[in-house]
Length: 336
Image 1 (cartoon, rainbow, N blue to C red):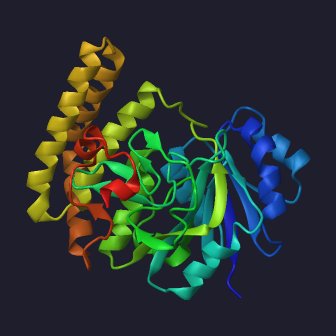
Image 2: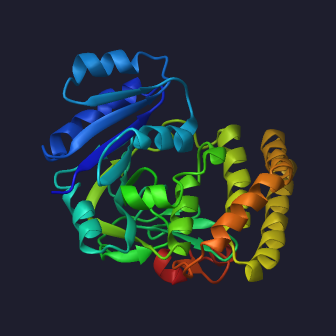
């Protein structure tokens, strides 16, 4: 029988664990293990877990390695055939676990699968970070089935079909241990944000698929580590997107897409400046400078990824989602 572990990476999320972990314990089958990997918390999370959740395994890391590095180190120490990576601010529902594992067991070419994510505060709406499956457009802008840029749709069952997608949400993603190891895990240089999109892109290039299984439903609070308007989050999103494009785009597309994307970033930085958002402007500028500084290591990563390229990825929208959005197309069905 395959072994499955739910792995929750925690950093100073004691209050989130108290709020959301009871649902995970309640809704997860007894044969599935639950592990909280603590990323060097200083808020008493570890002590609270030992005292209030004695049935949950606690794995302690010596410091905060970020989402990418924390998961890489934690998963290297956890023995299981399948991992379900789960944010500490996710509430599960009855039967959430089984459809994800069934999907992986039914298809050896499936690298990762996510559930349908609804918003914890607006439970009838899709959640920003994944909704019902992740995609990117031709310039690398992520969007979802159920969330286009800043607009999330009400969940009325319109996206309840199982289907392939481009990326699975890091808020809740089931994956194969062997595949996670094969593609090298998360890129730790990312620290946090977009590392799951990068991982899914590399998995697809290696010949595997990514999917969403809406029969599984969870509720995500979001912003549990960095708030939506955090300068640090803005910086990581801009920087990591450029890194991801440089590493994974084919040679034929790289020098067409990357300059256009950088120009779009420049335009958004000017908008921030005109609006008086000087800190946001500074973070975009800093992200681009750090992209150039990292080119040497990025070239090495790119060579390795492209040398192992076996397939073309699915789920890249061939137009600009930003342009379509500005023209009034704010639903996934309007795009596809």
